[in-house]
Amino acid sequence: MARAPHGFWLANLAVVWAALFTAWALFGSAYSSGESVLEENPDAAVAAPLVLAATVWLLLHVACRYDAIGARTVAKVLAWLLVAFAVITGFTIGLFVLPAAIALVAAAALTPVTGS
Image 1 (cartoon, rainbow, N blue to C red):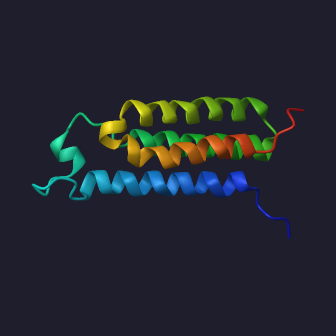
Image 2: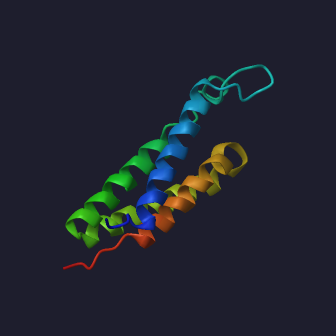
């Protein structure tokens, strides 16, 4: 049986991490007052990492399955946008998003496509 590429596992890990972060931001007690991130900061984009991670996962799946280099290129751009999001929001939610962003960048780099 063929083993799944490392990029597949990294992309799955990134989506799970982003989903856990989103659940924590929506429902978890993040502040001493017991409020969640979303309750304290209603303008926070807590679902953005999950949406981007799931989109990158889907694009990498398409790239690997159909050997589509364009899908992998778009996935790389979106993964780097998530890294930028994590850096820009570094003092709030960025540190929690950064592991998923790095995993997606690595997954995009490891996704095998020949571009034919």
